[in-house]
Length: 527
Image 1 (cartoon, rainbow, N blue to C red):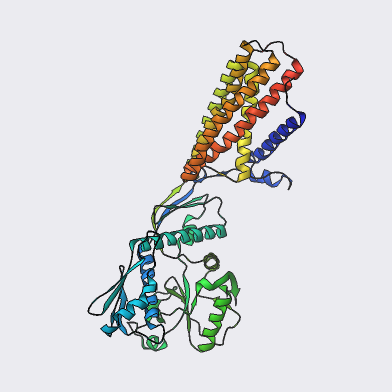
Image 2 (spheres, rainbow, N blue to C red; image 1 turned 180 degrees about the vertical axis):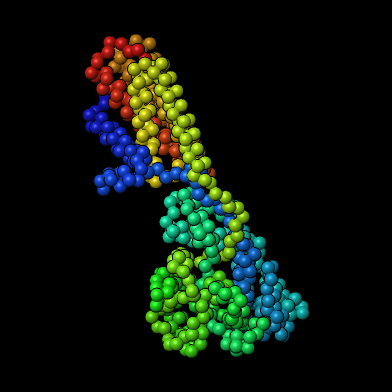
């Protein structure tokens, strides 16, 4: 008797039934899915951008803005270091460009003391080189220049942070299976399958959304100055760029301290209600206490959203942003503020849309190719191995069901290369059966009885099957880890196909053949 315990048969049947149950929802429309009971599987395979259509956008982080912000921070650090302590050092002409920060000492004798105070700015990087080059000159000039590695590390860090914030924004929007990934040092690829309004989504994902709160320079603003005095800047209003105010440069409260933002209504008008964290709440309370009666400007990406007057101290850590918004605009702004501001502006390098008709053609072509491949394999197995080929074909059909079921359960995204992986798996799925059947043939030729030939054929082929599938699995893992986008889709379906083919070939086909052999007790095998 061929060894195949009843508990193992029950387990194989259960797995097959689950595979069929989780595959069926993929053939139902939305109305039919809604009619299913709550306990029934309802997950469907998610189609990728190339199959259901959507938007493909390539963006680039504006590295000039990253460097500018880095230099501004370095300038502030230099100023703080030279002013720190009782032995302050006098200087003039503190300025920066895209290469370095420079200043001139008022007293050349302070040169060494200044160098000591600035020494803490430069650290040793992982390459063993200093992060900043500090140079002093005989005329009292000092320059602080970041190394190329320091600048590159900052750009990489900004891109990583941008990817994280984009991911949060996409999750807030509720898009299905978006693909956001780095390309090169400073580029980001965004693929949004099934997007109905790509422009709005791209605006939301790519908008910097840096919000800050500043005091208004009343003396300059009231005089209608065309040039901002030192420590201030002229900014236009968001809703009317012909209007402007002179805003003090100092950030009184940063948008980084926002804890929550929600779209709501105030006096029948759409507004955004915001709440600060503990630190931001304390800063906001202090500013409003010290500046009652003065306007407080809310700046979003370099434009004034509104500049309400502080009528009384706001101690609750909450505020309302109004500015003639529509309901949709308040919802978008609240979403952006919740997800966080991008650390640098982005520019669109490439944008294209894939229509659903093209995706439908791809799906249809994939279905035809898969069907032709499956029929060809089924005919080959029937002609070559007869009844055993019939059992292998049942396992092959079940293999397709299990692949679809796993793709549905895992929420994997099926792309055109993924379909190619499935078609490849159809051919590979019977490979293990071919090895087993050829081993059985050898055992029959060597004079073994049908039962012994079947048992020995499975045992001898097992190691070969495992070795073959493990090597293919290693290739699939490497493709998944090292590849991007479509390559990963191919690797996923290939890996799932390997697992399913191992199950159907070693367990399902063996259960079918064992059950047949036990019931018919054949005197000879025609394999």
